[in-house]
Image (cartoon, rainbow, N blue to C red; front, side, top):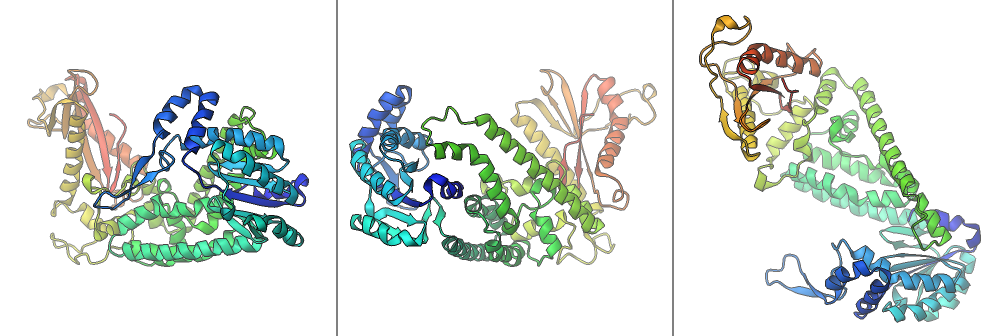
Length: 547
């Protein structure tokens, strides 16, 4: 309820109370609503009639016997047309109430709210009880709450509404997932919410000890959005989010990573994945921004509600889109500034790691859902080691000596050719490329195709003219039906001694030039075929531009 402050500050409603009615529907609402659809929106009527004319089975999740309950409103949650169904169905009720009373009203699906003086609200309630049943809408007094703004009006409100079995309070009440009422009630409501969320974070941390990838996906894709709505609808709750941030930083993240983190590392992990972080947002830092953005975006709609406009024709839709674009640009600028600030504060090794994490495609494995059917799942060691590689953190329990006899380290493991790890990474990318070309419908896809023999005297000295020379993948039909294209993969380690001081872009260019000099003349110009070059940097995958 971002508009709550605007309602309370309106001069017309200087003595304000708010009434929120949660209605209990009878089945005949469907018949009444369908008649309304037929007159207001004939083109939409047939579809809604087919969807809502009879109750449907709502199967109970997890029931082996196939137990179900009847939906008395056709299709409810999950129906894309549900909001249009309610909007059209309640339109005649809204119009009659708007003409008969002076209270400021707003409907959301079957939830109705009104704002005004006590006597305006009393008249509104009487009119609603009279008009609603005509359209199948039955107000439920026991589920209706009257919130009185001024304590001195509380007794008058009780005298008016308690005989109707309406709950009267001067504190506040939950409404549409947010809260309306006094500052003290809002603080209590949010604090209670935070306690529940902290408990959920702790439970998720227990799961993360054994399944860190699943816990990470659960948090970023689902759990973290539970408090986003509260932050967008309730102002000034930044300080109330501190216990939640403590649980995230001190319990959940160590459980996911398998290690404790410093304050500076927490700031790095807060960055979006595309900026080299993990997208583990700090709710203390985001609370005020979320509310501010939500208020700016909904301001045109709030103005229409305050004016009690029944048509959206005057809604400045372009202005809303422009506001969203502006806020999105500001958010991107803020992330860029935060990224640069952190790069100045962290050590050179971590800075290099964050820069590599920003490369296109380098973070796709983090944003993908851990679907077992697609082999996207990682066990706890694989996931934590991958995170450690991403940020150049030490990996525990690695052998002290390599198979080649050299002192072992992460950098040496990625370079040593004796263990075959370099070849394994290269071949995995080669085979993946070949499979993707087959799935795309290309013909004659081959791995390590042998090039045609050539006369070395007709080529430049740097060109590979050896008999039996090969590239990694070839396919026909990529660019045109019969044209044959060649693909080559090169694996390199961006943090090895020869690369650690080079910009990432220069590493790409260096390897691309090397492959071009070696094969382009033989493959591209003489044979009339194309060479495409791809580079794999360490565990950061990126396609190089076409050679």
